[in-house]
Amino acid sequence: MKSYKLIVVIDYSKTNFKCIENTKKDLIEKEVYSMIVINETKLKQIKRKFPNLKHVRELGSKKRINYLIKFSENFDTQFFECVVCSLSLEELLLIFKNKLYNKNIKILVLDDHVFKKSNKYFKNKEKKIKIIKEGNVRDPKLKNLCLIADGLANLYRRRKEIFRDKEKIKKLENKISKV
Image 1 (cartoon, rainbow, N blue to C red):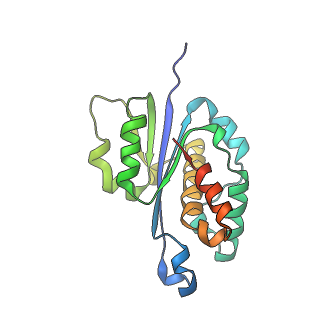
Image 2 (cartoon, rainbow, N blue to C red; image 1 turned 120 degrees about the vertical axis):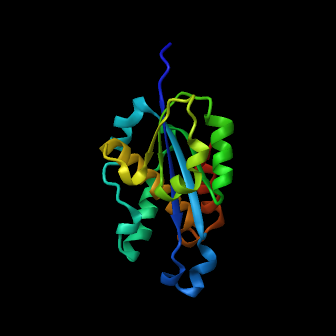
Image 3 (cartoon, rainbow, N blue to C red; image 1 turned 90 degrees about the vertical axis):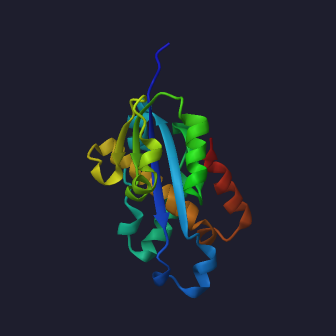
């Protein structure tokens, strides 16, 4: 049986509260971390499933909500080995350590902010993991994964603003906690 390698992407999303109305501040999380893990054999399928991804920050404020709603409707966990969002980087790193560390990880892409905060955590000479800062990613397939992780982090961070219905929020939270 052939052992496939995994690609892990960890992203960070934060709120610039200067740009948000006071009435919405309690609906939006201050910062969120997302982690997606995919088997390298599914990269082409992912590109077909998510062909027109954008970086959420680059969208206008009115387009962001519509983009995130569509992203939520199209997001499917079946392509991923693991999908997690957390308000704490420490919690995400604990999940990585307990569930993924001993797996066959080929590439680890870290958001530049995460890279700065956790560089020592991921440096391990005995493991042959290629660690890439998100800002240095050149491969279009990896960029696509970074945009998925970005969309996921932003969607989770703004879920209470986008979906006022508690059942929809719970459904989304369950969908993106596949460990």
